[in-house]
Length: 154
Image 1: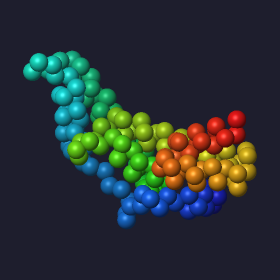
Image 2: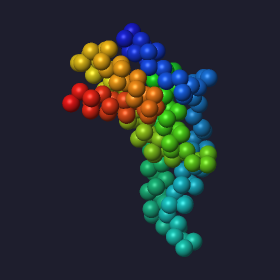
Image 3: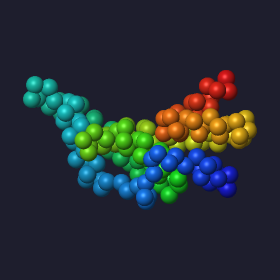
């Protein structure tokens, strides 16, 4: 566990730093965002496809539950300084958050850090740290950092 926190401090991505632990919107705020997304997506010629709208809303709210679950990592640097800012930036348009895609992105980021930790054990910290440092600077994503390591060691 100490190595994990050491790794996180080594890879603190200074380009995206939050002053404090990221806060989630309320469930009602996410529901309103989801409503806007689903209405826009499933309205054609002023006619809302109610079945698809309901399906869309269900997926969005499942995303909200997953985001809440993943937000348990919020006190860890890899999440609060890199993963969450990266995902929220990519899946927020004009203040409206796509919770389904935010959840998917956060899942990929958490898997990315787990992969990086695995690669460090398998291929040596020094070699992997160099690749990860460059990838985090370039992409700002743990998923892309893990992908970069994978490609470099092939």
